[in-house]
Length: 273
Image (cartoon, rainbow, N blue to C red; front, side):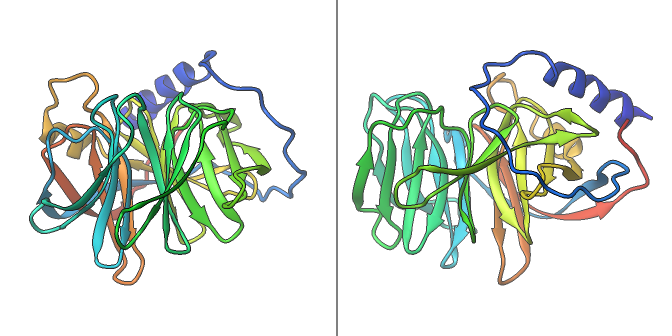
């Protein structure tokens, strides 16, 4: 009942107007019968150190290490991080006047967004050397992940867009819904077993979205983990999802968090109204 009340309030708040960009038309898709998302609790498997000064925006696992993009002007970087120690192995700075955002891997390159600067950067995944930048991107940058069909991008609205990984042109878009309502504030993204996992900004929840129709299939409750952090900064919210596909390990962290968690998802009998 507590979960139902809490998330129903969240749904109501996200249904209000929220700095959304114009929506492109979405293609017609067949929708399977839907009884709401399956609800999971997050069980901690392991806890690792994390840079408490890192304003985490993007997170991914590649080649035995974590790769992380951070935000805030003058402090935004793309870096490689050792899991066990939390120490930075290598780092490249995003220009000081830009606010770094989401991060994705595409064919040996790391691609990083900026928030409202209109810039997308490309970095060599092995060396973190800067490869190229595009400075006329017309949308806000929030989250980014990669899928077989291209890059999947969020901008804080209920819209996910599939981008061409070379030109960044929009190939298609889809509106994300939870129990039939648009779900906004989609932030950091990670593709896991065909679903797009997304942090819902300023909440202790992660949703798993079917990219074909935008329907939320899973809801992950991380309130217990957030409570162990006891953040004192209002910006220190849950943000950061990484998936080690080879070893089936799921990692989460947050902005300005001193810890990163490996978690296991445990299905509950709760429902979301």
